[in-house]
Image 1 (cartoon, one colour):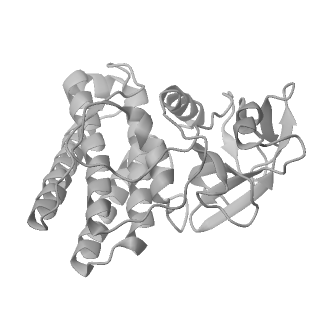
Image 2 (tube, rainbow, N blue to C red; image 1 turned 90 degrees about the vertical axis):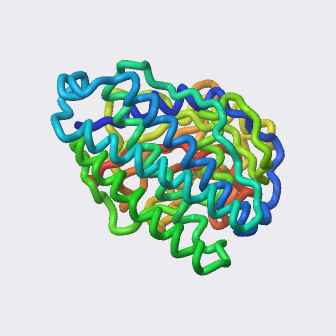
Image 3 (cartoon, helix red, strand yellow; image 1 turned 180 degrees about the horizontal axis):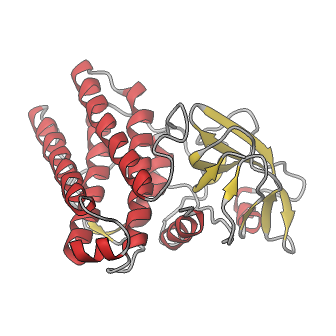
Length: 311
């Protein structure tokens, strides 16, 4: 089952709700308390996602959609894991004298009875969770917190592998997982957070959204083209002109591979003619003003997410 179209559509629906910034800021200064609250924010989101799905979709409906037993029971176990992570992180923050964040209000771009849509978005969210913990690891100072984060990371990775296998995808499509930094992850999570108030103000901001043009074809490394709808027009907010070189940078494993874009569709879209070779699985792509430095100062949009298959 190749689900790149469903994946792209789900993310496009969520991206329109984001609140991007126009001017980029320096990479935020973080400490262990901020990082634990960052992780707790993501765990609350995942917990609510599974809670709603298990309330809306029955075991029989999962089976009818092709997800035979014990899939439903295993989803319940994943929900319990996310709930346990929420309690652990909240308790750790309280023990350190740091105020923990709280559950907010969330909207997920999946109809209540859309089994395939739910499982597909589950795969995306679990993959982002892995990338979030992996990217945050280098900033954690307390060794006990680092060990705990690593322990959660490996569980999230098992969730990802299980869901991917259930979709008929490779459970381990690449030899390395992909780290993302704080603002990159926040850019992916923020569209789902639609209300509520937290006693904690995290120092992260969302990049402008990056929309992939829908396609009936799956994405293949070293072959498929990618069109970024309206991206050139939106880039004008950053002073980008037709003469400004812009790069689509693909994050896959430990690789960050830039490809210079060209302008299409009557000076509205950006496009690349070929996804670089060597990327696979859940791949992230941003637009950057630099082909060598891919940081908060150079990124002008993204990340978007693609499911990419080897050639």
